[in-house]
Image (cartoon, rainbow, N blue to C red; front, top):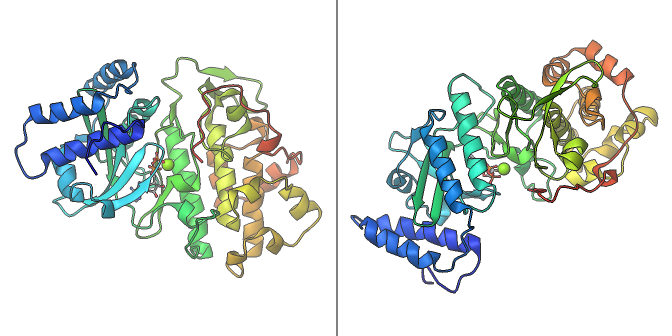
Length: 405
Ligand SMILES: Nc1ncnc2c1ncn2[C@@H]1O[C@H](COP(=O)(O)OP(=O)(O)O)[C@@H](O)[C@H]1O
Ligand SMILES: [Mg+2]
């Protein structure tokens, strides 16, 4: 197939094609910028690049030069060498932002390299968000977050290439193991699953301490290293509470005053809190809700649609005293401690209460996971049994809904 077929009319194909062209043009040796530019001009004849691209370019360039980003800038040649020119065999995944390749740097470190699909609406914002959080993380030690090692950015004629480099996580994402119809792996043992759940909670809390709300917590965005230590990643939808111009404190949230901001509606179906889904209201409780769904999945290995089905888990398990095994995936048989599993499901349910004011913040979630039974009891005594599944929620009014599920 021709590398750049002008009959292609799909945006993603064009930009992937542009990217392939750049890679191809650099293979071997000294192909001049003029040649590369001509290739891009050829691709761009299709005139499908959005008109706001120029604004995006200026904005990204200003952002990269502004001093906020303290990450290594890789050259395309370095990344090509690391991946054998982005060979198909090195492809790890294909997500909302783009393709992820596995590579090895000359110093021997294994890396994951995320290449943007295109500069469709929203992607430059995701690129900036990842580099912004990556730079914040780089200034401290956050064992439960995926660090950003560096980036590559190029604006070539009308194509934008945005690449982010992370350390490679040998055991992939948590979604691979839990609650997904695609799950093919035996889930990790019970102590490991508890450790993973606690690490995810700690990862979210370290983001909150930095003033960042993740906004897309879900098993697919938690990565496991070679020791099955969990790291929260994919910060492209992160919201920066301290930077948002429209922060307001809502004193009406019972006992805590929670910083919120109005954002566009974003996140993944099933993990999105009702206030985000319906009004784009974002706060740390947005992540607490998504963590609750994730926690129930880690404990039960149930698919998302079952977790969200019109099942009142609390009624069934704690009022009707239904047997826990009926709520667990068959793969979990003999793979859990019943009383610990029930407590973690209780915690998950507390986190997914409809009213954000009723959800705890992450330090309390962590304390409960570390064994504070009084905190769990107190919360459970005030548990709101009204079960409103997201299907009961109103459809989002905002037409900018992003569903990455
Ligand atoms: N550092 C990494 N190590 C191993 N696999 C990774 C890494 N980063 C991403 N992946 C794989 O790629 C998938 C998509 O990555 P993610 O960062 O979530 O991008 P997207 O924004 O496209 O969802 C992940 O679910 C995981 O399977
Ligand atoms: Mg993702």
